[in-house]
Length: 133
Image (tube, rainbow, N blue to C red):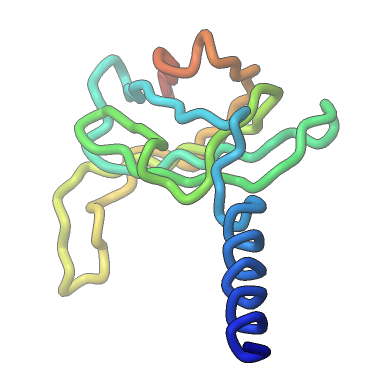
C-alpha cells in the first residue's frame, strides 16, 4: 500500500511539473513574416536577426531566421516574438552556393544591413525590408 501511494505521488508530481509551463509557449508570443529586397529584387538567400531593443524597454531572446527567395517567417523558430522595439540585422546572398569554397549561401550582396522597427501583432505578417545599398 505504501509503494502505491509513493508511485501515485511521483506520477502526480511529474504531471504537475510538466503542466506548470515547462516548454509551454507564451500566449503573448507570435511569429513574424515578410520580405527582404535588394535594389528592388527579392534577396535569394540570407538571414534576418531580430534583437529586442533593451534601450526601448524590450527584452527577450534574439531570433534569427532564414531568407529564401526574398521571404522569411519565424514560425519554425524555437522562440516567438513579443510586441516591442527591435533592432534588425540582415545578411543577403546571391544563393549560388559553393561548398568547396565554404560559401554555403553564395556571395554577399551587401554588408550587414541594420535597421530598427516596432513590431506588433498587427504588422507581424507584413514586414518589408528594402536594402538599397
